[in-house]
Length: 200
Ligand code: IMP
Ligand code: MG
Image (cartoon, rainbow, N blue to C red; front, side):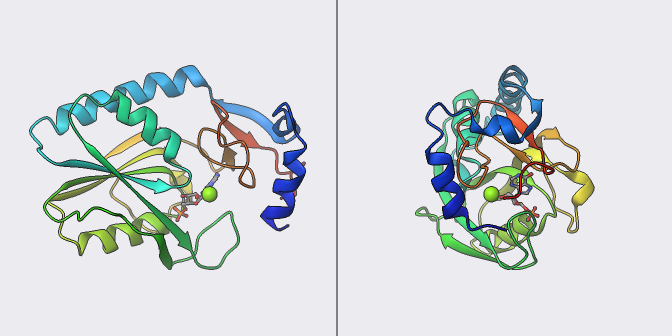
């Protein structure tokens, strides 16, 4: 695994943002499908939380920030937002081990609030399982998960997911918030990385 900073330098020369095409095996979910599904999720959340007076969306940085911004605008009930960043110990970039660490904590006190965690992708389930444990000790009124992507075949720890955008096969994906060595998060689709060409 090369150091991400070195690869970031490489991509910096990619002036017209087309370098990812070399590593793109297929577009798994295009912009239109993402938009349509997120509109549905927004409706579901708005219905379920119509009586809540303190809905708080918690965005798990960095991957979920684009999903959060589109989901939030598809939600028609009042809500606050807060952000936290998590890093997992060990095991390279493509899987997470058991333990996680908060690298940037929330600014809000979540006690008594209806918390909805917004995540980009659930893989083994280790990250979110730990986040749920940590946040539940802070006594929210309710605590649920909304994930854009669910790589269900890879699950090691059971995590209760209330809202899922798409269940996807066991493929390494990027775009729409998910990075290829920190670049290309702004692509409007979810693409599959061609691991035969990509040695990141
Ligand atoms: P888990 O703890 O194994 O569920 O891993 C969740 C985290 O792994 C996500 O928040 C992502 O940061 C990362 N991850 C898992 N699969 C992918 C992928 O296909 N593309 C990019 N990041 C991924
Ligand atoms: Mg990531």
